[in-house]
Image 1: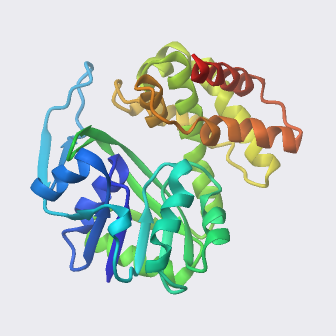
Image 2: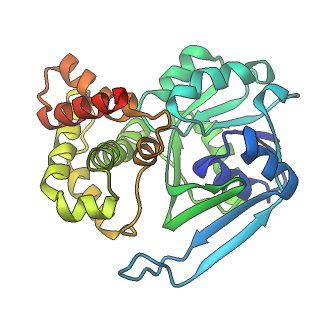
Image 3: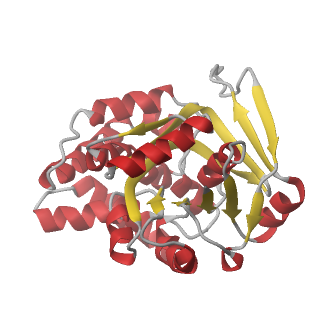
Length: 307
């Protein structure tokens, strides 16, 4: 099969590097110096071992260099059996449109962007076989051509179509990527979303790491998680148990781990504030749910955009 990985950042780069070791033809799509580095030298994955010291440093670091076919999206050619969109939520529509002439109603597509509505967005745009999906990973582009993954966290979760999920699961198994097919994919995505929404908002708001926010703003983060769970419940999804689970996950992550939205705010890059914070405020209003703490943080973060 031919597999396209659209976006070779922390998520897409890590996944593409593993897929490139399989029997399938894998083509990654990126831009700029990152793309040029990958084309010339392949992609480098630096993966920290799971044994962490209090200072946040690992006892072992594993580095892998993988040759990977890569090009700009506008240069795509041929037909793709599977397309993984590993771009930010605001680039999903344009990315699909750019590759739409290379897929058909039999192509399996999925978005790994943060958020809970991207599967529905793709179904509006496309006649392809759309899976609902999310991914658990802490990774980022350390420098051009280099992906840094922190800790042991990785899980690719998808579902919605039985046969297509089986096909993708087999590909992931061949790539040694931990993957799970979920019958209730909607709830599975919300379980990931509650964590990333709360901690993306909090790390950006307090301009600090997940470990710092957990240690110094525990009650505030717990309140955010509870508000998100209330919105999910109003939309027919029960994730109340995820409040405590999310706090436990944060407790066990490397202290210096952060979120992509926090890093985007620090580097004054385009961010996913609308998807990760604004969505909860918008849906809370629609469902008549009170979310005062999220509303306060979202309002302040909106102001920082204008500074």
